[in-house]
Length: 237
Image (cartoon, rainbow, N blue to C red; front, side, top):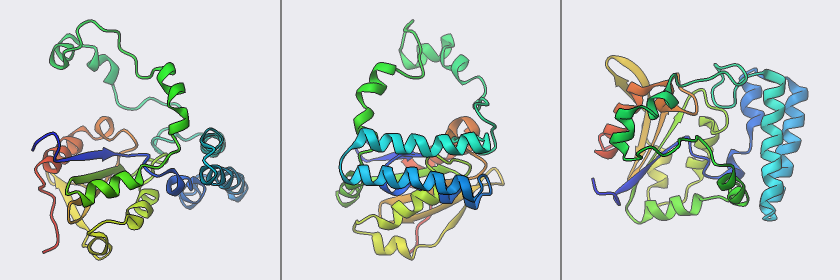
């Protein structure tokens, strides 16, 4: 596969207008009551109005307010509902990244590792709530393969929210996707998740994983990437 043949997007915050509906998701999961649901819904409505008016900084506030209300009420992580509050997930990820073996393999020398740059975060804040849905549609219609995968336990990019995005995509195989079969995906006799493909588009649910699929389910993630880059996930005839 050449570097320009396609892309794989993991738990991607692709279309804020669609994704900004956490209130219904976490209410249906039983993680908040109707009072918190209503407060979250108000914050989300404000966020969507600001997106429509291209007030993206204010829209980001609605996004943060909704998730903040959820975490305060539930004490559950927005990245994985199986984790409480800020409980760490992913094991020794940072230690692994900074090991001599990995540093040599990814050619970073002795550069200092940081999981986030506050400067970059601030500079990109106004772009966070801008949709890239049209770009996804353009890539699909231009013949690039696009694979989305989502962890089952994620909230911030919850699978049911992304499915609404997938169903709204305007691309050549949209009708085919609407009627496509959902397939069981197994890894070493374990049910890793479920896949659905249409044309050059594939979407995957990864079981028992949150936002950080490779750290929650590394074996599943390896198999996913291996099959995605080789276009091995099943499709309807």
